[in-house]
Length: 207
Image 1 (cartoon, rainbow, N blue to C red):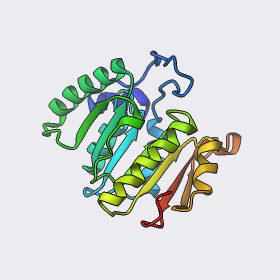
Image 2: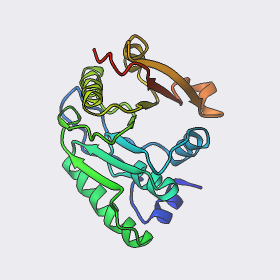
Image 3: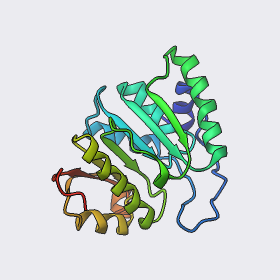
């Protein structure tokens, strides 16, 4: 299914040019994960109703609507750009009208990722290179601090993973590589076209 067809199915608008490039060098321009890539991810990666995924750099909310539509899992989008946040909220209204759902599973937060208080039910965290590795490290520390309050299994999902992200998690004592999911055809030309998933292995080590 093509991009605009998926948007039409979900009654949302997430395609087209992305504007609102942040002035800070620590934050990257917003770009949604292609629906085709999401199909590949969830052909191999299991997500359940009981899961709660945090999407950092959620933009117009595409991932949240896709997950709710297919898996009924809870999703919270964290977006620093107020214009994108407002568009996500507008998409939310249209999507809920289209699906006749209450919307409890789809929430959006407008603010900096490093300032977001990790929900103690959240157990899946999605990153499509939304910010610098320095911000990424702070977010990971926030996630690990939340484990001290509520122990649970944690997985980190990276799409088009930045080398600095990979180096940080590969050398972190609390995470181990779980799996890689490559995107057929495009991966051969671009090795970044893949999902890399890490899981928490040591609940007692949060350094």
